[in-house]
Length: 153
Image: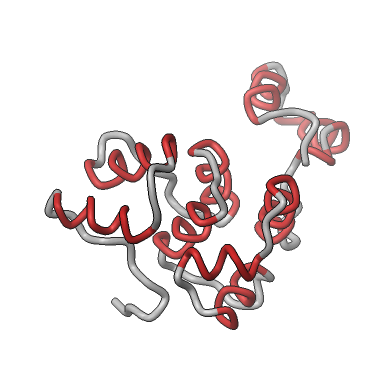
């Protein structure tokens, strides 16, 4: 997807004067978000890399096909981070890939100091089971399970 990683861009910015931001954007255009369906592009690229079909991912994530396809095409948006986490886990994303998906979706990344997030991070690192296994472990530790697409605030 990108030639330069975020760290490389940050290092360039350390030596970039604010007046030269236009030059930075021009030189690094292909490595910057353009605000035009970035989440969809990122997810589709990852699904292709992993040889996964959206239908299978949504089934494993326990998200309805209609709603899931609309989320993945950015026709619909969600404020529920757990929905994005379900999709990422079902797609066998690494923790790093999941954090990137959350960033692109403009959601808080998983935070190691938060006990629930810390437990979720271990699942993304190891992929020991299914969404059901994650929810059972969360409940066993007196934490809220991953929300489903049918749950409301």
